[in-house]
Image (cartoon, rainbow, N blue to C red; front, side, top):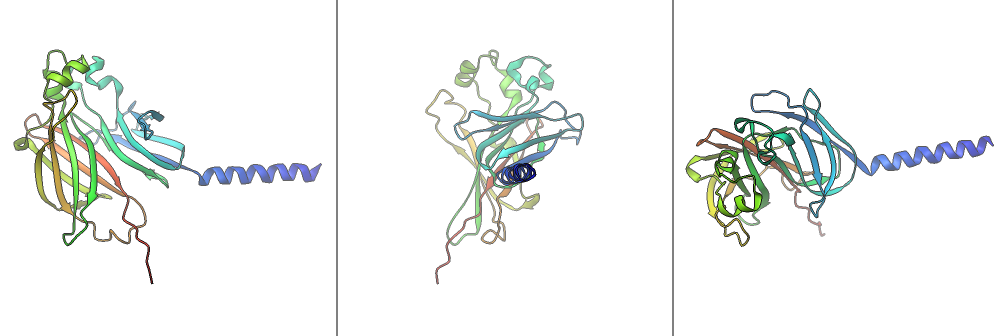
Length: 255
């Protein structure tokens, strides 16, 4: 009987150990642009098909934690207080905000993701490398202004608003900062682009391509980089940021 109990305990311990190696924790702090903690902020992880996978909320100190997340690659993490979303009509217009996004979430180890969000949303942010003689990284992003969102009379109707209102930010008002794992990168150039939208948002085609410094240890880095893009819209003094997790290139060495 003692042997059976001992075997059961060992099996349980081994099972818990295996579970621990197959899961990760994603945690951090949510703050506003004055450094104040944001409580009750919903933090969502999205599957590759953009269905919702896991959800939590920040506490009174702004801390959040998504525990026991299966290892893997996820499409994105989104965060904001749901009641601040414009179409919810639950706060005054001056308190309405847009989401924070982190893209290409490579959950192969525990992740600390600190979040700030405000009235500017940087959507679809993607970082990639240019292979060749120029040591640079390119970043695509599309800023959207909450002030322009709510300026449209029928902004609550998502289909109508996306078809008939302009929410992107003109180049003369837009500025950026870029960080890799918390360290600033030099921005070589910012190129406004016009990319035709074949859907219902034909007017919202202003986006940006940032040419930035390449991280120095790109070919020896052993974990994904956190590429953070911080934006400012000077027309309405709006701030926002987003993150992209960039996997360093890995090549087989041949003798």
